[in-house]
Image (cartoon, rainbow, N blue to C red; front, side, top):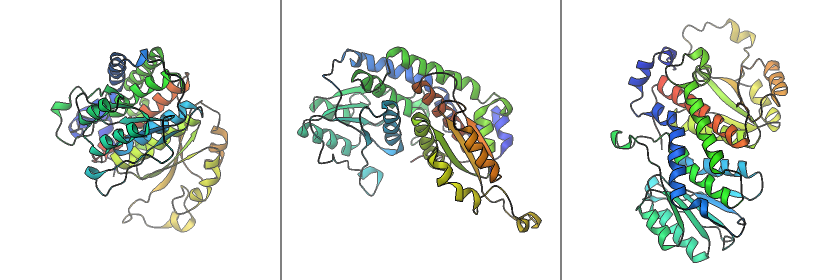
Length: 374
């Protein structure tokens, strides 16, 4: 159950936030600037590559690496395949990554890890060296991964760790790690011509993240705070996240992953216009927003409130898919929430949607008493 009273009580939010989640998401802009500086010091802006790779594989622990690959693929707009490399293994400490058989000197391997201690990723760097693949990593300086990349003649950008990491209990989630890992890879993929993320564009991303933090901070009341508003709307709801545009689709998939891993909330994601058909039966089924006659007259005093579908619409450009989505929601008496970024390019739009949904997931986590992360 969501305790909505916590949302408008900054002191209560602070007491509930034992892991520093709000500080982590609020400091995303600062993490981007620090990560961009470390990328510059590592020589990323000075790279003069011969051309684009044939394909890019992204490897790393947990759901963050897959989200990074998704965002890079969305921003690349089909100019080069960007794929997550999934590990095998029965336990987190025993993960193994294996390069596909087709990968060779024309391909690029990107490793993203906030710990830098995964032996499976060190072995992966060795595999890339033997295959003649170029490899780059974002990992803590002097970590085993950094040493493996040095031996493989790859590039390592130091991971921009959380400023207050030493003050947090062991095992606490670093809510800003996503941006610290993504930013150097944006700078790198800009240099190889995959996407446009020059230093000025990355600074604009940091500014946009700061703007979202100002709008969604714990002191901002729910009625004017889009993240708190959405968190309250998702109370006792099954979120069905629809998206328009590649950047919005990547944000939607990450929102679903973060809701499950951080807040313990199930959710589904689909892209428009296919979502209108794919989820139409869901909107009319057991979890539908409307209630039948028997449901209406039933005594609910002893009943636990059932989950009902709520559509969450993420728009890369405001207004384009809304009429069709609104019409279907209205037809099935299904509530609908909308998030759309302010004006800007796809990189800034993705940043705003990712930040808004990050804040929403944190508020859901704190107000429902959940704090977990794999």
